[in-house]
Length: 489
Image (cartoon, rainbow, N blue to C red; front, top):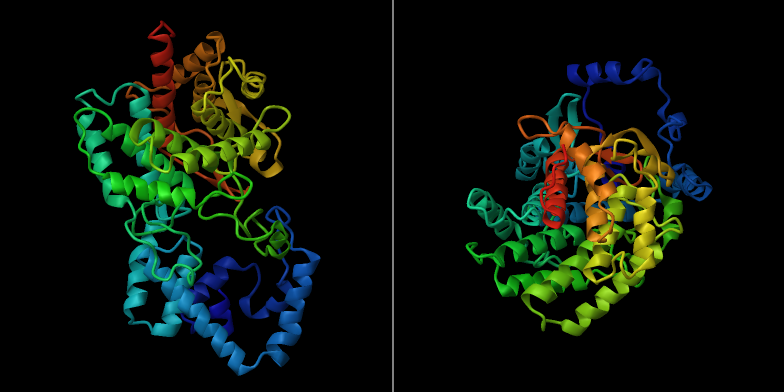
């Protein structure tokens, strides 16, 4: 965006741009004084208002720096470096880019710099459709170029947890899923990764595909767990070698923050004071990385599984230290009411599932840990009359549990999983929850799409359409494993 603005690029007017101007603006385009609307925003969208510091800096840049103080030498060097970073981002992601915010901007920068017939522009154009998808609400935008690795890992874990992985009926599907994870592991680091401000990625898995190329702590962890689980069962091929599994461990061990927690794409690299420069307005907590119970749990459980089931000796002391610090952070992050705030799903139900799973992985359950019992109590106090749980997106924006008017299948399954991981001793609330989930299943086996499930940056909600299949399978399977197959409905 800074490169495009500094270049002063303007696309020539044509019938399409004139039609768009009529559609987008509430007054004639040529009558708008855009400079006077620099800070115009709907109150509904102004989730994180710009600070006085940022407004002062913007005023200096607009009124003094650009018109009077910036030299051509400084401008040209800044533009060259900005485009070099764009080119490296394109190279490191196969022109997929991190997401649908920088990808169109990079496309436009390549149009300006390389020309309308350039290979770089054509490569970008090939990827633009990756971000778009259609559903009953119309055309929507993905947060990235897909969720392929993330969903595949969760599907594998759900089938394994349900005790169905060795069923011959599902082995072909699971083998293909394992082959996909084998193919999608990132095998090399970025060229001169420090210059690109990139995290180590050799051995990691991205959220979507290998080509997109961004290390994500929880995606790497969930994929690693899925590979270990399947390759540890009879009849499945050993596609991902020991060395490649160790590469994943090596990458995860670089990602712990000083606090003990784990962020998503990289360790925390700056101060929270950077949020004073947050210009997005619609998003909160975006200027740096933060610790998340979801990501921290994923890493804890992946490291634990690797050490217990695959290679107890590899970097043993380091893994033990990392797990101890991470569990300490999870306990510190728990609120006084027993809850954890979620940043990647809605919201307290999602984070609580992860947190209780991580505590269970190190032997902390209801039978021996008051903090676990407190986490379970938080959920049980909010169980709805039909046995389910339901939470709205407002929990994410306000930081306070906001109950949905109707229980939700996916969130109910998250709580079932949490209580089962915590080894909650009483069957009755679990059976009520399972009854609600089973009652919502359709004759063809599916569950309807209900309220939105995902979130990022506190105020942007995301649909995960496969969650309504993944988590019911896992929750019902875990319940059946513990209690058998009692008559529920």
